[in-house]
Length: 254
Image 1: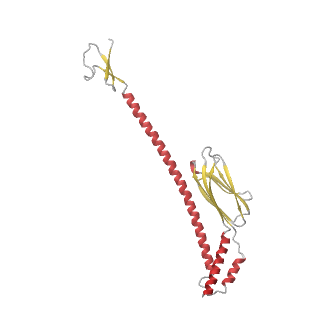
Image 2: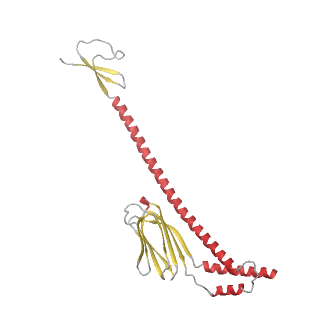
Image 3: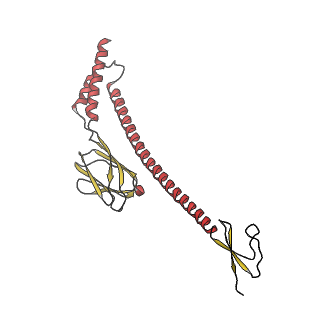
């Protein structure tokens, strides 16, 4: 029994090392950069033959939240072309050997720069090595083992892929969260700005009304009793200052 446990442990450790080399063929890179107004930025990614490459981009900040995207093969063919889009995911499978060119275009915007998040996932070709034959040779004599080596290998492979996919989804969600936060902050600034403008207009209108009301108003006939009381033989026009409650008599010429 102890011998079987030792054999299982050795096989498991060897399997982990083998999977580490196998998964090491995957290349994953992600970063965020500023795309200046009226500019075009290109990046290059080296791939091997019969592999796959996946490019995901998302505009996080900037007026319009849109850029142009182009993916060009090593031989110069344009594989993907997006015009003024906010996000996108593109996959090339199988790939050619060489450098793929990934370009982002902001030439249509003369004022606003854009903040762009990009992730590139490169998978190497699936090659069967001599180690797999060694696994089969090691597993064949141990028919009584509770778990088969291939089952363990497939399970670990599936777990690794699921974890990798989960990490990619979390990264995508973080990019969406960053873009939503930018939109909220931009909307908050706009609301605050126009609220201040509206308040300034309201105060200006109120002051204008007060100033207009305080101007001299002309009344025909005798003034009110609480201002002045005397009689005159000629018609008069009383110029009244509403704010100071004073009256001035002007005699009309007949």
